Image (tube, rainbow, N blue to C red):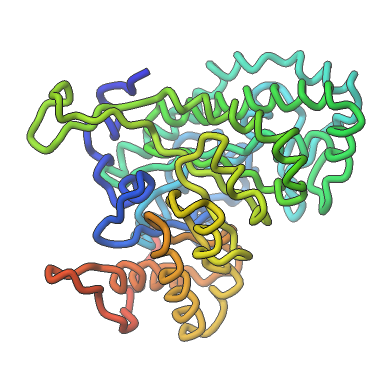
Length: 399
């Protein structure tokens, strides 16, 4: 299915951006940068805007969600926005009793532990999302209109991560109940995973149709699994979730030609797959249908590239802990990440997890400017300066 003719990829507005080119495996003139969890916690303008508003309510307020999404793009000059939302939003909208508890995370009203529990949960029809996701699609459309040529990334939680929350009833260190269910009742587990794949796949598709130029699937808790368990019990559902956007394509015409010209190329919306502690799963995470694999801070990018066969664009993987280190320490680490990232077909610089809430926003701004300058290719083909660029301190917009 071709995207709407007014979609930013179809019009060419974002198709030639650094981010999309890198996701397609082509090295742009400058290494693109964005940060997971860039929209929110570390920004004073975000905290000011969120006063008195619960997390999920903020996600479902199109004006607020759009403004929060745009804040880090304005402040840091990152190469992409990522929609301010939460992976449990589609669960909430389909009828699951879930709330975000400050300092804890998603908490479910009832844990799903038995085949009967799974049957009751999966009786909720994911098709209701076609209408109930209206606040999300409105936020995407509003944001895309403001971003212009800067692409917006849509995102969703992978089926296993959603299932883990549902079975555990909230956050867990080892996801023991989820791992027990997959082995003790594989039929019930398969039904649960098929349902979460449908729910989160619809969430991801709605964002892309509304204007997102790329999609990222987060499997935050897949690192708790062995390779064998991931392959047998999880990968099929992740494949099904990603399939919701793989059929969304656009015609990229050669410069100066019409999209219907023989020189045009049919492209899919790029999909990134990221997990935490998933170094042993990288190849399988790519095989579910992803174009790009996000790598956390535990595995060097050159080693990740080797595990992926040297053929897959990578994203990552600055250690978030180093954002609070002295600048020379952070700089040396970032240069090392960039150097290792050069072994892959292309590289998008990101963190190996999300922005910690105590991060100084000016460090992120300076880091983006540094990466842009140090990776720039001059007209004679030489890499840019190795000096430390001083990024401007940008005042937050008035709330």
